[in-house]
Amino acid sequence: MRPLTHPSIEHVTVEGILHALSDPVRATIYAQLACADAANSCSAFLQMEDRCIPKSTLSQHFRALREAGLIRSERRGVEMLNTTRCAEIEQRFPGLLPAILQAHAIQSGQSKPAKRKSAARSRVG
Image (cartoon, rainbow, N blue to C red; front, side, top):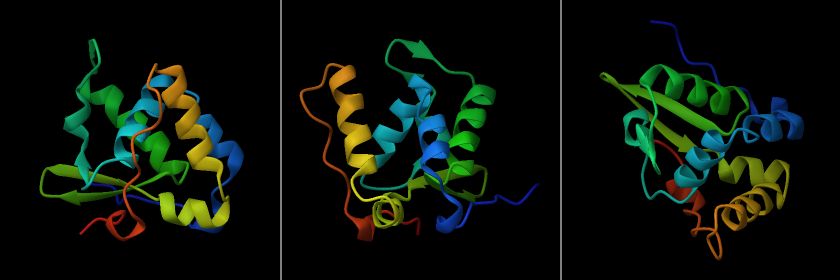
């Protein structure tokens, strides 16, 4: 099994973040992870809104989010647990993620984005 690689925060770019979140499924996954109280497995996203997403497609979406530096993934047995790197990204690019999440919420028809979890809970384990 290949080891998971996560870019250092210095290598995370605005362009990479915007590219990763340009896909509506990835934007929805990230928005849900950003407001989660705990790490989520990939399988928690098999059913999104009105469609089923194949595991292979989900793997590609999570890989894109991980390579952009938006999430941290950790293998626990057969599960892959995912958390956001909101606190790290907020330090590097202040205000970027809240603006993106707010725009996503507006576009999705929500009045405002779900409340983000605190930085203390944004890490796995």
